[in-house]
Image (cartoon, rainbow, N blue to C red):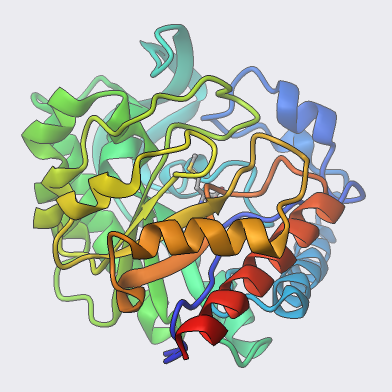
Length: 343
Ligand code: MET
């Protein structure tokens, strides 16, 4: 793993090329949580080859920008969550169900119609491909058990805590294979905890810990208030944060730049390394390296540099590639400024 102080990373996704994905469809899809295969512009049997090539572009961009811990850019996924959940047994996504989503509106989601079980590898090839194509540490992201549970209509289990535990068991099996395939960092995306803190208090931590049971190496949990492209008004604080001290992950990733978060809340996470969002994805304006350095210095008023991993607020999927690249470069250059100061 990278021994660099203030190692930079991404939250996961990077813009997919327009030759691969129909961006209008991606943005306007009515049902982001179930599979909508019509976003892809390349047909089978060439889709995988096209996704591989686009993945290389994303990885090379991250390297060229100077990011220390990179991902595959989540290029093969239309959504950060359904890619995994819809691959599991017990999940029916062709005929969706309806729930009240985190913004309070009816939302179509997959239905749980039987016992949730992992029947095949989902992201293992993605990790092997990334590992074979970079010398840098590789991170892979997966949707967390709470977020997947909140994004399903449960028509099978008696208690949704059991749903989360079975998602967690499926994740644990997958994560073991991701580690064997060469993943250095495992990140669980749990953005839905902020919308449902009471439900999260009841079963999220137990489920996260089940998902990460016996997993060695660096693990992270990503929190946010939703993609900036989807959610424009952001709260100024987290409804479910100190509870995460009890999660068996070394890193907690928080969106901080766009909501202009009071970083004092980082004191609520003793012992955790924090992936601090220092890139605002709610604006196409590109931060200067000095702005990024300033945000890192703010975080250093609360946490020692050993416990800070500078990152964007969330996934960069909905940005243009030019903007995403420029913002990643500002991230890497900003971290370099602060590194020089404290060297
Ligand atoms: N890993 C995901 C991404 O980068 C996180 C999404 S949270 C809304 O796109």
